Length: 252
Image (cartoon, rainbow, N blue to C red; front, top):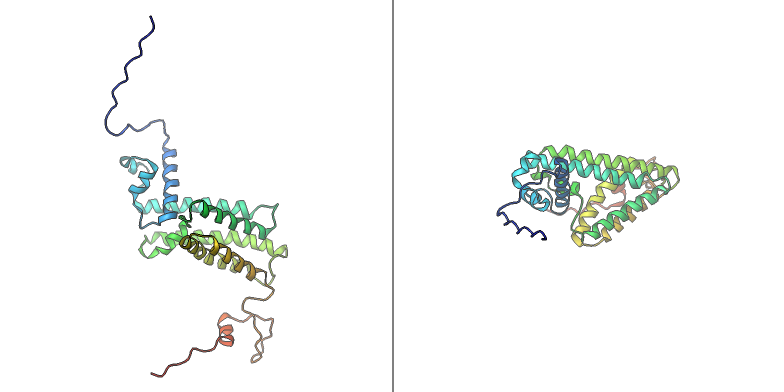
Protein backbone atom coordinates (compact mmCIF):
# COMPACT_ATOMS: atom_id res chain seq x y z
CA UNK A 1 0.00 0.00 0.00
CA UNK A 2 1.60 3.31 -1.01
CA UNK A 3 2.59 5.68 1.73
CA UNK A 4 0.22 8.53 2.27
CA UNK A 5 1.78 11.99 2.04
CA UNK A 6 1.79 13.76 5.36
CA UNK A 7 -0.47 16.81 5.46
CA UNK A 8 1.29 20.17 5.28
CA UNK A 9 2.11 21.52 8.70
CA UNK A 10 0.36 24.80 9.49
CA UNK A 11 2.56 27.84 8.85
CA UNK A 12 3.77 29.59 11.95
CA UNK A 13 2.79 33.20 12.29
CA UNK A 14 5.29 35.96 12.93
CA UNK A 15 8.90 36.55 11.89
CA UNK A 16 10.78 33.48 10.61
CA UNK A 17 13.54 32.26 12.90
CA UNK A 18 17.08 33.40 12.26
CA UNK A 19 18.96 30.97 10.05
CA UNK A 20 21.86 29.61 12.13
CA UNK A 21 23.56 28.37 8.97
CA UNK A 22 24.33 31.93 7.83
CA UNK A 23 27.77 32.82 9.19
CA UNK A 24 28.14 35.99 11.20
CA UNK A 25 30.84 37.22 8.80
CA UNK A 26 28.46 36.93 5.83
CA UNK A 27 25.81 39.01 7.58
CA UNK A 28 28.32 41.70 8.46
CA UNK A 29 29.64 41.74 4.87
CA UNK A 30 26.06 42.08 3.61
CA UNK A 31 25.46 45.04 5.92
CA UNK A 32 28.66 46.71 4.72
CA UNK A 33 27.84 46.22 1.03
CA UNK A 34 24.31 47.49 1.51
CA UNK A 35 25.44 50.46 3.58
CA UNK A 36 28.04 51.51 1.01
CA UNK A 37 25.46 51.35 -1.78
CA UNK A 38 22.95 53.42 0.20
CA UNK A 39 25.48 56.08 1.24
CA UNK A 40 26.84 56.51 -2.29
CA UNK A 41 23.31 57.38 -3.34
CA UNK A 42 21.87 59.30 -0.39
CA UNK A 43 24.76 60.37 1.82
CA UNK A 44 25.00 59.91 5.59
CA UNK A 45 22.60 62.38 7.17
CA UNK A 46 19.55 61.26 5.17
CA UNK A 47 20.05 57.57 5.94
CA UNK A 48 19.05 55.78 9.12
CA UNK A 49 20.24 52.45 10.41
CA UNK A 50 16.75 51.05 9.83
CA UNK A 51 17.02 51.66 6.08
CA UNK A 52 20.31 49.77 5.81
CA UNK A 53 18.91 46.87 7.84
CA UNK A 54 15.72 46.81 5.78
CA UNK A 55 17.55 46.76 2.45
CA UNK A 56 19.92 44.09 3.75
CA UNK A 57 16.96 42.06 5.10
CA UNK A 58 18.64 41.81 8.51
CA UNK A 59 16.51 41.74 11.66
CA UNK A 60 16.69 44.90 13.71
CA UNK A 61 17.05 42.85 16.87
CA UNK A 62 20.40 41.57 15.64
CA UNK A 63 21.73 45.06 14.97
CA UNK A 64 23.77 45.16 18.17
CA UNK A 65 25.54 41.99 17.11
CA UNK A 66 27.25 43.80 14.25
CA UNK A 67 27.53 47.53 14.98
CA UNK A 68 27.71 49.80 18.01
CA UNK A 69 26.34 53.12 16.73
CA UNK A 70 25.60 55.03 13.55
CA UNK A 71 28.99 56.76 13.84
CA UNK A 72 30.68 53.36 14.04
CA UNK A 73 28.68 52.28 10.99
CA UNK A 74 29.90 55.33 9.09
CA UNK A 75 33.53 54.69 10.01
CA UNK A 76 33.22 51.07 8.90
CA UNK A 77 31.61 52.03 5.59
CA UNK A 78 34.26 54.68 4.85
CA UNK A 79 37.01 52.13 5.47
CA UNK A 80 35.27 49.52 3.31
CA UNK A 81 34.74 51.97 0.45
CA UNK A 82 38.35 53.18 0.70
CA UNK A 83 39.63 49.63 0.40
CA UNK A 84 37.33 48.83 -2.51
CA UNK A 85 38.33 51.98 -4.37
CA UNK A 86 42.05 51.51 -3.71
CA UNK A 87 41.82 48.07 -5.30
CA UNK A 88 40.00 49.60 -8.27
CA UNK A 89 42.70 52.24 -8.72
CA UNK A 90 45.46 49.65 -8.51
CA UNK A 91 43.68 47.48 -11.06
CA UNK A 92 43.76 50.37 -13.54
CA UNK A 93 46.90 52.29 -12.59
CA UNK A 94 49.29 49.36 -12.14
CA UNK A 95 48.52 47.60 -15.41
CA UNK A 96 51.96 47.18 -17.06
CA UNK A 97 50.46 46.27 -20.43
CA UNK A 98 48.77 49.68 -20.82
CA UNK A 99 50.47 53.09 -21.31
CA UNK A 100 50.12 55.18 -18.13
CA UNK A 101 47.79 57.87 -19.45
CA UNK A 102 45.63 55.20 -21.06
CA UNK A 103 45.29 53.65 -17.59
CA UNK A 104 43.82 56.93 -16.37
CA UNK A 105 41.47 57.00 -19.34
CA UNK A 106 40.39 53.47 -18.49
CA UNK A 107 39.59 54.46 -14.92
CA UNK A 108 37.50 57.40 -16.14
CA UNK A 109 35.62 55.18 -18.59
CA UNK A 110 34.99 52.60 -15.87
CA UNK A 111 33.66 55.27 -13.48
CA UNK A 112 31.42 56.66 -16.22
CA UNK A 113 30.04 53.20 -17.00
CA UNK A 114 29.36 52.61 -13.30
CA UNK A 115 27.41 55.84 -12.92
CA UNK A 116 25.43 55.10 -16.08
CA UNK A 117 24.65 51.59 -14.86
CA UNK A 118 23.01 53.03 -11.75
CA UNK A 119 21.18 55.77 -13.61
CA UNK A 120 23.51 58.45 -12.17
CA UNK A 121 21.87 57.94 -8.78
CA UNK A 122 25.12 56.95 -7.07
CA UNK A 123 28.15 59.16 -6.67
CA UNK A 124 31.29 58.91 -4.56
CA UNK A 125 30.79 58.00 -0.90
CA UNK A 126 33.79 60.10 0.15
CA UNK A 127 32.61 63.07 -1.89
CA UNK A 128 29.08 62.77 -0.53
CA UNK A 129 30.28 62.72 3.06
CA UNK A 130 32.76 65.52 2.46
CA UNK A 131 29.91 67.80 1.45
CA UNK A 132 28.06 66.91 4.65
CA UNK A 133 31.04 67.38 6.96
CA UNK A 134 29.45 70.30 8.80
CA UNK A 135 26.85 67.95 10.28
CA UNK A 136 28.89 64.73 10.54
CA UNK A 137 30.84 63.31 13.49
CA UNK A 138 34.23 65.01 13.75
CA UNK A 139 35.94 61.61 13.63
CA UNK A 140 35.02 61.40 9.94
CA UNK A 141 37.14 64.41 8.95
CA UNK A 142 40.60 62.87 9.32
CA UNK A 143 39.37 59.55 7.96
CA UNK A 144 37.98 61.11 4.78
CA UNK A 145 41.09 63.25 4.27
CA UNK A 146 43.27 60.18 4.69
CA UNK A 147 41.31 58.36 2.00
CA UNK A 148 41.73 61.25 -0.45
CA UNK A 149 45.47 61.47 0.26
CA UNK A 150 45.80 57.76 -0.41
CA UNK A 151 43.99 58.09 -3.75
CA UNK A 152 46.18 61.06 -4.64
CA UNK A 153 49.35 59.08 -3.91
CA UNK A 154 48.24 56.21 -6.16
CA UNK A 155 47.33 58.66 -8.91
CA UNK A 156 50.62 60.53 -8.58
CA UNK A 157 52.52 57.26 -9.05
CA UNK A 158 50.64 56.63 -12.30
CA UNK A 159 51.32 60.19 -13.46
CA UNK A 160 55.03 59.84 -12.69
CA UNK A 161 55.07 56.73 -14.88
CA UNK A 162 53.40 58.79 -17.62
CA UNK A 163 55.99 61.51 -17.16
CA UNK A 164 58.84 59.00 -17.46
CA UNK A 165 57.22 57.71 -20.65
CA UNK A 166 57.14 61.23 -22.08
CA UNK A 167 53.35 61.50 -21.93
CA UNK A 168 53.36 64.36 -19.41
CA UNK A 169 55.44 67.51 -19.60
CA UNK A 170 58.52 67.27 -17.34
CA UNK A 171 57.85 70.68 -15.76
CA UNK A 172 54.87 69.42 -13.78
CA UNK A 173 54.88 68.09 -10.24
CA UNK A 174 52.87 64.88 -10.40
CA UNK A 175 51.81 65.14 -6.76
CA UNK A 176 50.26 68.54 -7.51
CA UNK A 177 48.56 67.22 -10.64
CA UNK A 178 47.14 64.32 -8.63
CA UNK A 179 45.78 66.71 -6.01
CA UNK A 180 44.30 68.86 -8.77
CA UNK A 181 42.69 65.77 -10.31
CA UNK A 182 40.93 64.62 -7.13
CA UNK A 183 39.81 68.07 -6.06
CA UNK A 184 38.09 68.53 -9.42
CA UNK A 185 36.99 64.92 -9.89
CA UNK A 186 34.67 65.03 -6.89
CA UNK A 187 33.02 68.11 -8.39
CA UNK A 188 32.69 66.41 -11.78
CA UNK A 189 31.01 63.39 -10.17
CA UNK A 190 28.62 65.70 -8.31
CA UNK A 191 27.74 67.53 -11.54
CA UNK A 192 27.25 64.25 -13.44
CA UNK A 193 24.89 63.06 -10.72
CA UNK A 194 23.03 66.36 -10.85
CA UNK A 195 22.69 66.41 -14.65
CA UNK A 196 22.29 62.63 -14.93
CA UNK A 197 24.77 62.45 -17.78
CA UNK A 198 28.48 61.73 -18.29
CA UNK A 199 29.39 65.03 -19.94
CA UNK A 200 30.91 66.62 -16.78
CA UNK A 201 33.25 63.63 -16.35
CA UNK A 202 34.42 63.88 -19.96
CA UNK A 203 34.87 67.65 -19.90
CA UNK A 204 36.86 67.48 -16.69
CA UNK A 205 39.11 64.67 -17.89
CA UNK A 206 40.05 66.44 -21.13
CA UNK A 207 40.75 69.60 -19.13
CA UNK A 208 43.11 67.62 -16.89
CA UNK A 209 44.73 66.02 -19.91
CA UNK A 210 45.32 69.42 -21.47
CA UNK A 211 46.97 70.75 -18.33
CA UNK A 212 49.13 67.67 -17.88
CA UNK A 213 50.42 67.53 -21.45
CA UNK A 214 51.05 71.23 -22.02
CA UNK A 215 54.72 72.18 -22.27
CA UNK A 216 54.18 75.42 -20.40
CA UNK A 217 54.04 75.57 -16.63
CA UNK A 218 50.51 76.31 -15.54
CA UNK A 219 51.43 79.74 -14.14
CA UNK A 220 54.21 80.72 -16.56
CA UNK A 221 54.04 84.19 -18.14
CA UNK A 222 56.33 86.72 -19.73
CA UNK A 223 56.91 89.57 -17.32
CA UNK A 224 58.91 92.44 -18.82
CA UNK A 225 58.57 94.59 -15.71
CA UNK A 226 60.72 92.23 -13.62
CA UNK A 227 63.85 90.20 -14.05
CA UNK A 228 61.82 87.03 -14.61
CA UNK A 229 62.02 85.28 -17.96
CA UNK A 230 59.13 83.94 -19.98
CA UNK A 231 59.99 80.34 -19.10
CA UNK A 232 60.24 80.91 -15.37
CA UNK A 233 57.06 80.10 -13.47
CA UNK A 234 55.32 82.81 -11.52
CA UNK A 235 52.97 82.37 -8.58
CA UNK A 236 49.30 82.30 -9.49
CA UNK A 237 48.70 85.59 -7.69
CA UNK A 238 51.35 87.28 -9.83
CA UNK A 239 49.76 85.84 -12.99
CA UNK A 240 46.42 87.33 -11.95
CA UNK A 241 47.93 90.75 -11.30
CA UNK A 242 49.53 90.79 -14.76
CA UNK A 243 46.62 89.47 -16.78
CA UNK A 244 43.47 90.35 -14.87
CA UNK A 245 42.42 94.02 -14.71
CA UNK A 246 41.64 95.26 -11.21
CA UNK A 247 38.02 95.40 -10.14
CA UNK A 248 36.63 98.92 -10.63
CA UNK A 249 36.32 100.85 -7.39
CA UNK A 250 32.93 102.34 -6.73
CA UNK A 251 32.59 105.71 -5.07
CA UNK A 252 30.98 105.42 -1.68
